[in-house]
Amino acid sequence: MHISNGYAPLTPKNEFYDELLEETQAIVEGQTNWVTNLANASAVIYHGLRSLRHFQEKPINWAGFYIIDKNDSNKLILGPFQGKVACTEIAVGKGVCGTAAQLMQTQVIKDVHAFPGHIACDSASNSEIVVPMILDGRVIGVLDIDCEKLEGFNEDDRIGLEAIVKVLIKSSEWTQ
Ligand code: SME
Image (cartoon, rainbow, N blue to C red):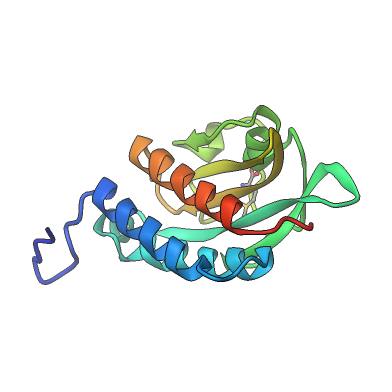
């Protein structure tokens, strides 16, 4: 149930992620093109998070995908996103994105400035979450979200976003 204070819904994060998951399932319904699905997913995630009370106080400034390069599995290339212009290539193992891809583990970074090798695409970013996209035991890309404030993300975000990534992987045909 949502309690309105006239400012923004006080939805708990876990309930919010249930709704975001449903919205993700709706946008991929009947569509298997990965570019199409990730383009709409980045919009759903970016605008959805920005509508949540927590992220009005700790605003998201970037949400999108980096995809493993078809011709070089050691390289992530920029995919569909919402936010400012971003770096186009990240080596696997470098930065927060490359680390998530290499370790095949979600990275919840409370302070990007304390992360060795963090790649600063937007100087406004202070915290970050990166979820690897794993298909049949191999990484095909990552979901990357940046926040303007420190400690923007926690376990609720990790669990909620990992579930969303699973839906996206399952619903799309990966021809990249
Ligand atoms: N900060 C990321 C780079 C991508 S941008 O945040 C969009 C990283 O360290 O991998």
